[in-house]
Length: 83
Image 1 (cartoon, rainbow, N blue to C red):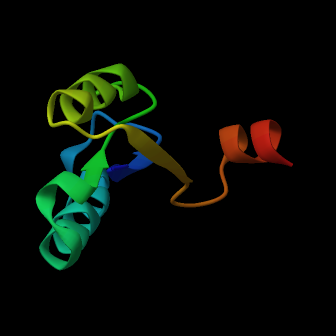
Image 2 (image 1 turned 180 degrees about the vertical axis):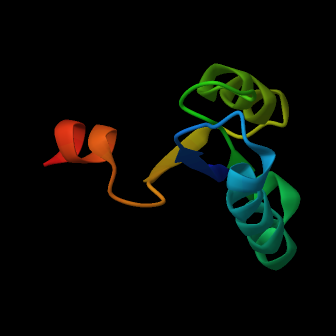
């Protein structure tokens, strides 16, 4: 039986206030769908990394990861890398 987990994957920031939005989103989605169904991984600056999160969900017996890149706003990196 296939078990999947949605991994929210925003850019990271050393600023805890910036990360709070994504951490709150993770908590809300975990509340709705179950802790093992939704996890958070950051692209840079802070843990958990995508590899950290992948190892965690695999250890939980999850065999499918759905990755959702998230961007808070249009910035230089978003503009240059996406558009």
